Image (cartoon, rainbow, N blue to C red; front, side):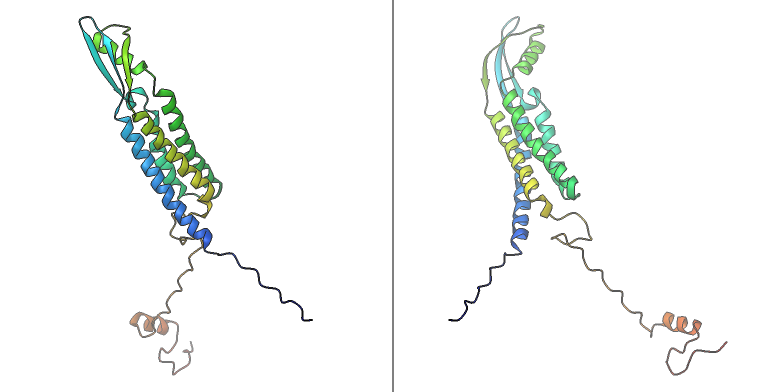
Amino acid sequence: MSAAVPHPRPQPDATRPGRAARRSVGAALVLTAAGAALVLLAGGRTWLTGSAEGAENATVEHVTGQDVSGVPGALAIVGLAALVAVFAVRGVARMFVSALLALCGAGIAVLCLLDRGDTAALEEKASRSTGLARTAVEHVTHSSWPWVSLAGGVLILLAGLLALRHGRHWPAMSGRYERDGTPRPRRARKAPDPERPEELWKAFDRGEDPTGDASPRQS
């Protein structure tokens, strides 16, 4: 009986990590940009509306997300900066910045959940309108914009998780590295042209014959 010939094991595709890294880079960029845009857009829209009984008549007040809290918008900007910083650092620093990006998204989502029903800003605005120290606000209505801001925070959180998972394979912003992170080979310097006038004079200064017909001059 002839011995069984072992079949070679299939080799893993070496380009698979590179393709996954490129896809994750694009996804993180899109998620962060879209998330920050949603948070900043929702921050300028009306979150709460209510009526306050003033000295003469009832007034209707509106407050935006920025009136309720400016922290989500600030975290969105920090998240954008963190994503850019991911490409400027390597190693442990890249993991730290990726974690910061994820924390920005999580912070936005949590703050939107906590602040979506906060009427403190609405009551403060009603007090300024009526001139009374404490003005009760009634018939408060909530818009859907806090949920839009929350969704933006979730997108930024997902971008941070992608950076934590695949960030070590992402390229860095350096001219000395290729897209896969390997150093670029240095270009070899071109040999000087011996026919150029300056090269001829240098040869004469060294005591050499540029034509190659004679040996160096004797001093």
